[in-house]
Image (cartoon, rainbow, N blue to C red; front, side, top):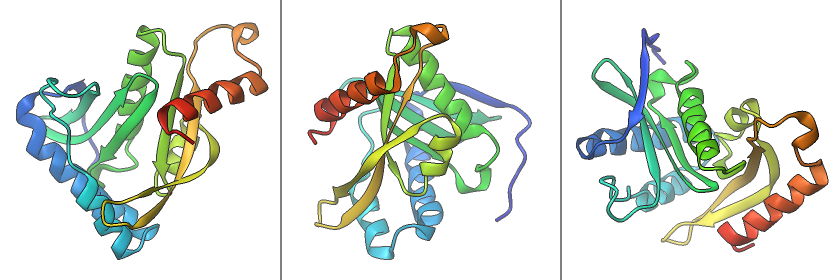
Length: 188
């Protein structure tokens, strides 16, 4: 895979005209990057179910960031309250820190809203990325596509607080917080 080294990555909030570029990134990332962890039927199930929300902000609670190099969008992320909804980077730009910058933007936004914990239902492909960013595995889960395809995923979470060590919850407390969030967000 030919990788281009970015000169300067800019992270900004999404604009309505970004919709098509974001959809293309999402499709390409699923087709190319997830193919090592999911079979063709699962890939197609993911693609069939991935429809972007109204990015103009009218009908979605997600906050969406895009990563640009020059005028080109090379990745995007979305989050809503305690939940990371998506992080996708175009396959030509993976492993260059773009996903990490998108994740950091979401984490800063969450902290600015007094949200100290983020959870994600990560693909098997994305698990190492989240682990490297400090997210801990909370258990296995799955989604079932609209066509009935079983797609395994990993539940993960991270404590974001910039508080001092003594103010961070103990691991048992963090597990209880995550279980509560899991129950609210996932229903399991």
